[in-house]
Image 1: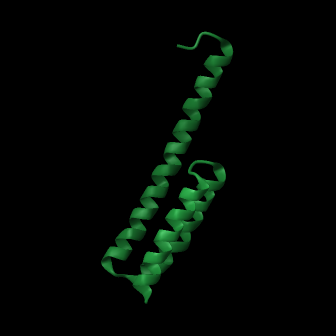
Image 2: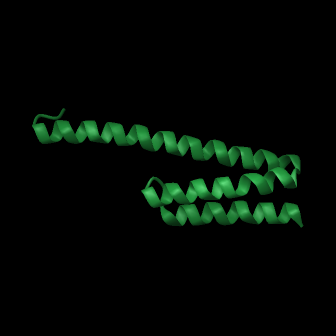
Length: 88
């Protein structure tokens, strides 16, 4: 349990940040699921439409430090490969 004023403030900041990060990660996962659903259904048009939104969101989260930049690059690469394979 936090005893000092600094520790109490740090705990409250961590709680706020954790809630914010959880929201963004949940949003990212939902967007990736939408893209994967379009890929699974074989709908190339929907996948091509959802890919830029998903990539933009992933890069934005990486720039905020919510996910690691290499994880973001890996996710984008794998999703783009799947969309290109479906389109071909």
